[in-house]
Image (cartoon, rainbow, N blue to C red; front, side):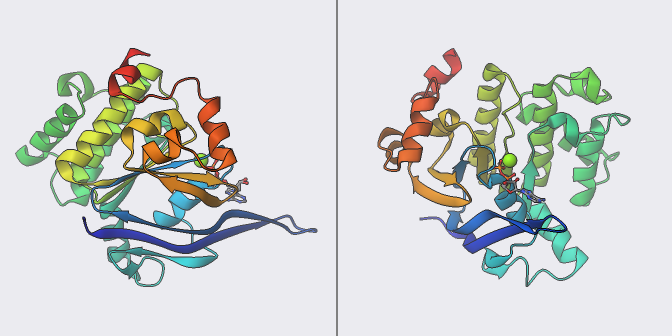
Length: 272
Ligand SMILES: Nc1ncnc2c1ncn2[C@@H]1O[C@H](COP(=O)(O)OP(=O)(O)O)[C@@H](O)[C@H]1O
Ligand SMILES: [Mg+2]
């Protein structure tokens, strides 16, 4: 069995809002799980179940109210103290978000997100090595560099932009990639191709992936294990076969029944 990478240990996040009457929302409620090296985990649940909050805690963007997140045994909230350590963490743990457009600045060419990644790993984007890495990363996600480099975001499709974001991950070679609804806004056939690229990233770079989605249908194909999240808690977990073919929890059964198609073979998925 591969090495343990990430441990969420009784993670809870309570948001407090309201001035006169305090309203508390338990967005994440006592969540514990482990992700091993090279594993693809799907975190599935309806909107508001706490998936993004959990993702942001793991990304060290918001602190948990209680509990710990360990990355190779290091408590990310207690043991990462300096800017350099945080930068190093973000080099290793990387996110791809839902709206590819939101990851780009409309005034800059798309090259910029790749150049920034190169700078993070200490490669001059204008050097020969930098140019080669950019081209290699774009090819790795099925893009033709000539059609992408030098373009502005509005000149590319959502699927192309999302691929550029994954090309950025390719350059950074993260240990852990958190993909939060990364394919939800794309049309079904593009979704399939992007999911395939995520798998390739895992297969070629050995990265672990936390694939966050409200769509349980997609997770059958991509995941080693599926976690079902409901009202801030993980209520069921197991292999795709266990969770989708034999759901135990009533909520999981409802989720499985509510999707029009559960893709049990990759070919089924591509045919939709
Ligand atoms: N910054 C915040 N302040 C207050 N409540 C929040 C905040 N972020 C999320 N929430 C609440 O936490 C719950 C979980 O949200 P979220 O993690 O975004 O769920 P999901 O990603 O599964 O849709 C929701 O009830 C949401 O309204
Ligand atoms: Mg979300």
